[in-house]
Length: 166
Image 1: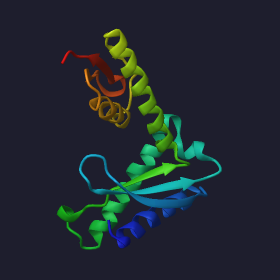
Image 2: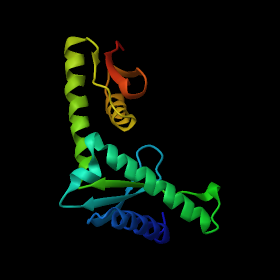
Image 3: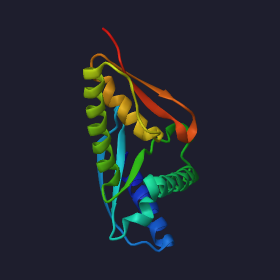
């Protein structure tokens, strides 16, 4: 993502925070996206009161990200850009909530994976968001003798980690 698009993303995020009456500092960095090699522009908001922005299980943060994405797309396309070249990938975090969440999911996957390998019994995890399931799937995919399967629908969708013979 070029500097102009980074400026657009950060500006809209700050504008949304102002409209909401929220005070936060925005740190930023680029990281490589898992899987396809494209860059994801990361914006980490630092605030004294993160609970309102994060919400229960990150639901407010997910909604904030969605709203920012809609506004960014509209402004980007409004500047005469065509949708085929629309390549603004960004992620908003608050006080490193998502980063810490991912680390805890990786630890959970590792713990359950070791349990499944030891007992050779499948384990069903609690229902998770699509993002959380993706982290678990990615972590387990690197392990031998293990497979994952998502079952259920909507808010009850969860992962089963299974032992498989080679």
